[in-house]
Length: 206
Length: 193
Image (cartoon, each protein chain N blue to C red):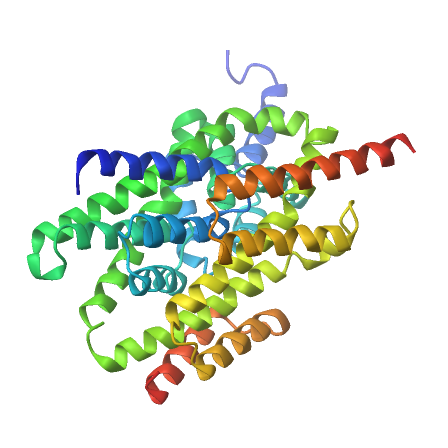
């Protein structure tokens, strides 16, 4: 029957347009996310956007922004969450597994190889000194990553003074008092989310 | 390492996976508290090395859990001197803890992704998203602070200066992170810090 109806030609063209913009297989997913993982230093957001939106065009920019917001809302590593949601959308559970393991397997092995190499020389005073210097440089990078939330804090629904207070409280409880994370989330998180909910309700009603 | 401890360790990381709102860096303070202070499975040096080295290799930040696992396994088996046994123990612990840290949150994403997409504008979801921001920011700043103190226990002012400079460079320039790490390494080695 195939080819009898002229409309088939149209169907095939449409199909090929769609197919060119989705991952071809689980292997394709695995390899693409491996490549993505191997490029991400510090933050992976920029790399994900460049690879998935600009180069592969598997998602539009607005789809990506939405998926990324979802991945950030859920607990767990954001980019891993994104890979799970993206993989499962195209190939179900195995797709999720393929995308996720692409992100973790080879980058993980490479990371352990680097750690192994460094540790083999860690007893040398020069390497130990270099590691101290790198440690504090990395600490500065992590603090900068935290500081990037400042604009969100400044325009927080509960107002910046209260948001800042909650931020300082969670810093103090985690870094200085050494509270377990579950307790910090249970206290500061609950207070913060409840206050935010209450403010949002007032705003929605207004 | 005893079996109950092994099990407890993995279950704790499963729980952390579900508490990791804001990603891997947000659970660094908790990993420090649990692994260094409470169980003493990692020394301050091993903790600082794990986080630092995970930053010079590419890949998602959650891989630092694998590096911590590697160090825990290695130390539990008696260190590098024990040879192959230690390497195998390190690799198994790296794999085990990484799976514990990503599996629960991935399952949640798998089953909750669609639901969340439908309800993303619900007040409860918006309140959760915005409400967690001050907490995540505080946790990430404490992750940085704990890494600083672990790498610089004597509070050497030159190391503090490198830390501050690195933070400012990240915030105000577009210098690649690897150059910053290299800069820190060269300064650290040259000054014998």
